[in-house]
Image (cartoon, rainbow, N blue to C red; front, side, top):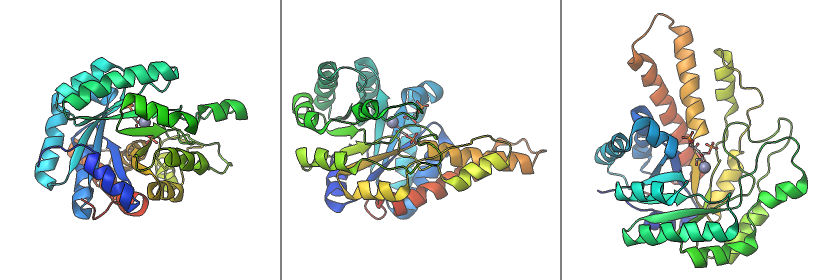
Length: 311
Ligand code: G3H
Ligand code: 13P
Ligand code: ZN
């Protein structure tokens, strides 16, 4: 099976009340951990590559790793550019075999976001590639954000119809309170996504796939493990998994997870290195790290996204 776009995946996910996991990949062990879990659970997948991942691992290596995963699993897999920051980067990924790209102009003024996104959509659609765009800025974790500033960073539902109509994008990432990284909410506060904003967006765009970035849950057992073995991650807090599950049952068809994979891998390697200070064969610590990613992804596919059995 060749790489697929998200078109079919999203249609089924929207109608079925579940979401597809979009996991960031940077090396072979990460690709293997994710895809072995998905194979056992017969889940469709989006593997996404950031600009930084592409610079780290090289475009060709990443493409070949994902092709190998398709050959090994037989699953429908989409290869997606995460946070494309220019037409040129998107074009390079489209020309180089990706089946989906994100053009992220969310920090730009509305009209500029529309113009840049439209340009990428025209190029991508011509080549059978789908495009994710973003409207609204993901919430930050700054202590001194006041309410009106905070509100202004959420997606404005009144803008989404015009944006989608004018750009022709295939999916839309929105800001409802998630953020990137492991420090999403202040310790002691109760994380709460803005489901009212999601609902309003969904009402304006019936049937249209919505994307959530910044959706790691930052499992506290993994944070504790990192800290037990010499790390220092005080106050790392993520998005509660029950809220992600709820979003997946609504219009959200793609949920992005990267930090949790990093955490699982790092906790495993720290533990291994501490307990085996005399070992120096990378296979010895990368094998349990890969297994830790597999276990985490299996949990996400089943208990958070609900996409197990949907390939
Ligand atoms: O949203 C960003 C992803 O977690 C990728 O991060 O740019 O460090 O590869 P990166
Ligand atoms: P996390 O940092 O919450 O894993 O988000 C990843 C992401 O949004 C990638 O685009
Ligand atoms: Zn993101």
